[in-house]
Length: 209
Image (cartoon, rainbow, N blue to C red; front, side, top):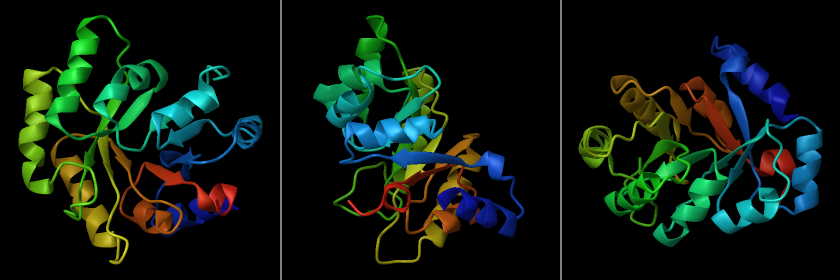
């Protein structure tokens, strides 16, 4: 069971299991499966797409359930995302920031944000490149008055994930950011070792898609 694996992974690196939040990644899952997870006590959910989040939660989101956008956000979906999600983990470019600020200044509810870092500098993936991170963060804080609460990454598939998780943890620590969203079904135990506070688990929780 996934919760037992989290407990063991935390114990193995002398961490408190309560510091680690299981985010159920419900990409392609139907409403019944999501509702069952809620009924079993799952409180944190991750959505890869705004539209799927609307389908899963727009009509029946309990007050004690938090939903997080863990996939790329298209600028034309920003309003829907801000209205629906409690946390957007994929803040990654100035054009998106400007759209968020424009809506915020019109009175739209503002969720919390994590910065997505393209930790492996892969051209096919979204995220701020590590070399651009400091400037991006400073711009958020000083120019736009947005204070992100953490960092998110997806390391390269074909390489050991540990060094990438270590780098993200260092970046967060150096900048006073408390949340580290890293680790999925295949590497969440490694992510826990390197300080993950939120792990995004789909297959290991719901089974193969």
